[in-house]
Length: 195
Length: 183
Image (cartoon, rainbow over all chains, first blue to last red; front, side):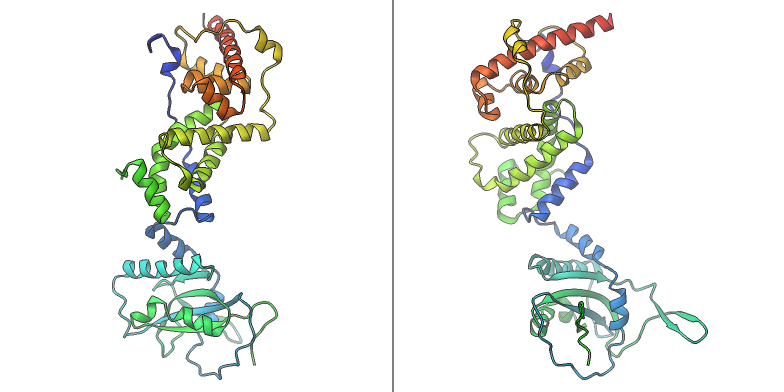
């Protein structure tokens, strides 16, 4: 029977799948680590990881105040540390897009080790400082100024202890560009870590 | 931008570097065929077809290192889709074949001939019992041999032949009824 007589010959052999199916398959493969996101996708994901660490950021904005370093408490492998990235006039990071790609690659390597909790690249505009007086809430445009410069971004990483967290933080690209990094252990659960 | 690398190069990149772009190129290249197959096997059930294609890709990428290129990559992917579609139908209790009497009474088992409206044809195929539909799609639409179908579906060659015979007869009955509607 030739194709002209075969009614099945005219049936389409291809059908466009729903667009959502590709995203779903890709997501599953990423979760199972069968594929690794492309650099552009990693960049987007790292930016999207900016969480409610603004609260932590407000606490970290008081950096510059000299405090006695508390004795490192005993911590398990799930200890978390906030890394605040500072930039001042000596910072030379080059093109923003290149820098973000560089930091995203570093973040991605941490994520693969299970060490990355969160990350965020902070915008240059839109910063406000809040304070409450007796009569009102004051909201002023600007930033909390420290002698380390302004906060440009943050990472929250996991480490067994402070030594390990310092080792991790020591590899951050920010330091190569003349920036400074403040590392603060995060109090989790009932551990306040304050003296 | 279309990736110009051939299947072997893309599979190589996926195995060596888990390269997401390589996966996306393979997905774009092969999924329209896989989805059409899954859709037909599921009787037009789009969510079920998506499920089969999703499961097939995950299984394929996970087992890519074991693929020995004895057949084309597309042939291999199709076989995985067929298995996944069958497993899904089985989980949903829709794996049963047609009643025995339908199978034994089928005598009009020649290939379908004639001119039929494509929509009517697709609808008639979708309306076949799952067992009939699976064998019919694989044999008459996709061109698999009975021995291959038997292996893919875990049935005997004899069962494959009798189900095909029953499928063709059922299809003719359904299309005759449709012709009556159009007249």
